Image (cartoon, rainbow, N blue to C red; front, side, top):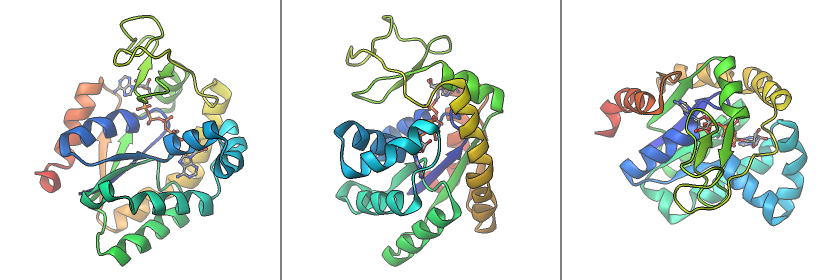
Length: 217
Ligand code: AP5
């Protein structure tokens, strides 16, 4: 099974991708996480990507497409995958479609998690992330058991460099301009499924599972 998750920053793509990945035994591939690892390791890609990411802008298509194509060639992606945060532009979607057509493994479904701008800002500005296991918390909505420490590996939680309100607003505007057109792209291909994602996490998980029930059973 091969899924793409779409949605505004803070829609819960990463949260739900982790849950579905455990359930189906397929990797959740977050382009944001991979890019942040490159930034931290100071690779050439990381150096090129950093400025765009800190500003809340997209990393150039050619860099991201090459990175994802490499990741999809790894053995664990052979049984399927969940792409979280890719594609984000029409050229990226086209490149993915071409790459999967060459492999004879088309997408199974595209899930769009729908939230309002207000919820996106509330969730992102309050989010803390574990730099080791990438689990996310929220200072009010889902705080860790011990202050600012990951519940699973006790690592101190961090804020990302793109989570202040101004940068989040810029990310929302860029999503509208460059990523929203993908909804039509995938709707035309009969792949798009929409999940109402304003509610609590378990409720969103139930709605996501119901949305893909026919293709994941
Ligand atoms: P990326 O890391 O992908 O960021 P994003 O898509 O903007 O998404 P987020 O990770 O911010 O949100 P999410 O939907 O995963 O929400 P989460 O589950 O964490 O990308 C970062 C940057 O990398 C981009 O700006 C760009 O520069 C670059 N980039 C990445 N991919 C690229 C590409 N393809 N092309 C070009 N550039 C690219 O949840 C958010 C918070 O809410 C958490 O605190 C969580 O605990 C909480 N939460 C989640 N669900 C709920 C719920 N139902 N109720 C209450 N709280 C909830």
